[in-house]
Length: 132
Image (cartoon, rainbow, N blue to C red; front, side, top):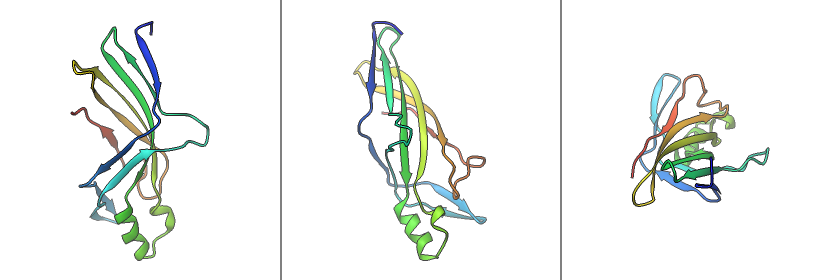
């Protein structure tokens, strides 16, 4: 990357997915309720960051995020399940895409989940799709 590349640190991120996601647990499918996404503070000090490569009109970013589903967690807590199932899910999202004419980005990429008792990595997939 050369002089046309602007590197940045992501300092804030807050998003909500009102419709949530479908979760299969013990053979039954549940609606998660609203899903909240925000930046996670990593124990190793790694920060969310990215780069804007204007020469090639490409953007890339790595976000360390915390995904929580408070409504579903409350339901599980009311059922008396192990608290390991109700905590937030931590993940690293690596996305890239085009820098658009209006200077916005169309990023997409894979999400690597950290271990979680409710959403095992072997059977859970997450991704961000490009959109506006």
